Length: 164
Image (cartoon, rainbow, N blue to C red; front, top):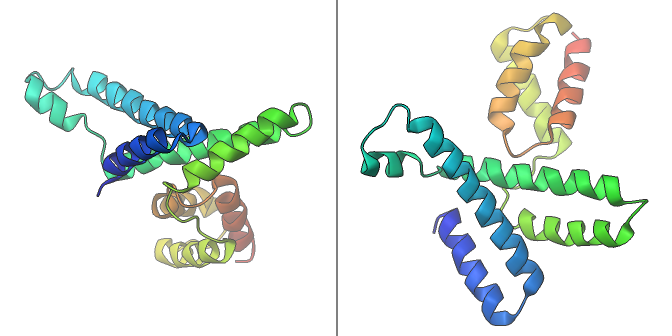
């Protein structure tokens, strides 16, 4: 079962069980995915003229859906940080949404797992100093996309390169 089907099934289950928080969060996620498909379709419409082909090509891949989910998770984390002191009630709502979204996001990598990937990419790229930050960061970001916080990745890449 792909992510789109899982979201649809979970939305139906939330409707039947009366779980309004899950229902709302899943609907928001489905809406974000739909908006991303519209954005993709708009870009493709300049190149593809046949309607059926445009429809097929504008569907999001699993990887693109994971990117949308990761984006939504990041938005919730940022909102929680912003609301924490001023509006604890809103922070709590965002935390609930975050927990629901995490069910669909890929397992987040630990700091040690990211460090192993960074060390491998440093060797792979032949990086020898902090000047090679961009080269290493690009490769690490590709591999950890959607599974690691960008701030953590940046910090570990900087630490590892400074030790060379």
